[in-house]
Amino acid sequence: MDREQTRYREWSPWPTFTTVILWIVVPIAVYAILTDATEIPSEVLRWIVALSVIGLTWAIWAFLGGLTVLVQESRIVLHLGRTPLVRKVIAFNEIASMQAITYRPLIEFGGWGVRGLGDRRAWTCLLY
Image (tube, rainbow, N blue to C red; front, side):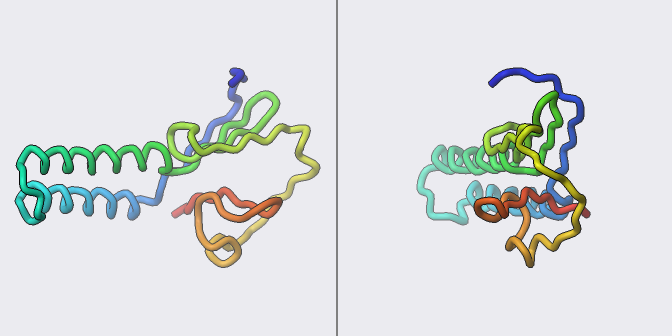
């Protein structure tokens, strides 16, 4: 990937309630795994599973948590999370026109995130 200078960067995180729910559910799950509430026979295996759950949760947050928009010299780059694993690049010369619109992501696209097909696609982050 060529390195263009970024003129503007914005990161819209997940809403706070999503992060709070995530970090409440994960410790409960890890506690259940470590206190023998599950049927995992070995203590070492329980620790491996618990640490795997924590690592997977962190990876989901890092790769999918929020929306990053970069305006560069000749393009706009959108990607989910902090790392550009799921991304879209739009060159300025591909943009025929622009306008600000108000839309309802849940009704029109079925939710937030990357939704839609073909020319009718939305990259939406829930703002609170």
